[in-house]
Length: 191
Ligand code: SF4
Ligand code: SF4
Image (cartoon, rainbow, N blue to C red; front, side, top):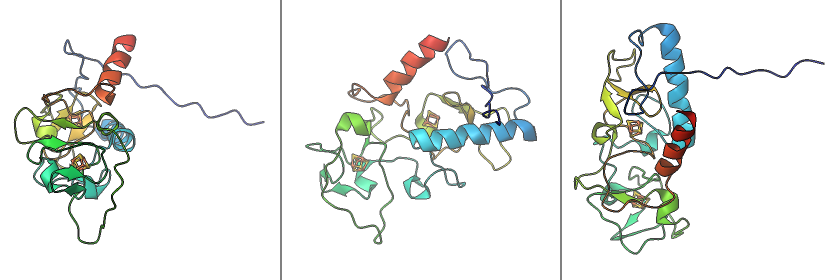
């Protein structure tokens, strides 16, 4: 009988801030394959998407704000997807943000709680995006597709206007039970 496949468990050094450090040789083809896989994982599990083809392109904000007022699911001051009394159209957002398209009709569902959606209102009054996330820093090497930032949360290159569920831009009121909190606990266990 054939043995079951064995997948490797990769390691990457973390800095004092707990974030993954971009290796000096991050631009080798071998390493870029690893970053691409890390990025794909993030897109499937944590809604990462960018304008270079990773994740769902309908969830990429060309302005990198991801604010409710420019989301396909906003309905005046409320939301068709999240069960919430009011959204902040300027600086509110959640992991279900989508571009506005006439071909994408929505329904009144109010299916998830703000906590499940990781809803938050950015203190900066503008919104989110990797360029406002404290977990992103200028990459040592721009990747071969042109991503100029390194995400220390997931270990891969990102674009400034991309985003994901764990964006760390300060929010006015942190929602309990968000993925961010769970990740911090997981990091504590492995550090
Ligand atoms: S709460 Fe989420 S789904 Fe609703 S309008 Fe805001 S970004 Fe869109
Ligand atoms: S930089 Fe921040 S928002 Fe962008 S993918 Fe990483 S954790 Fe998510």
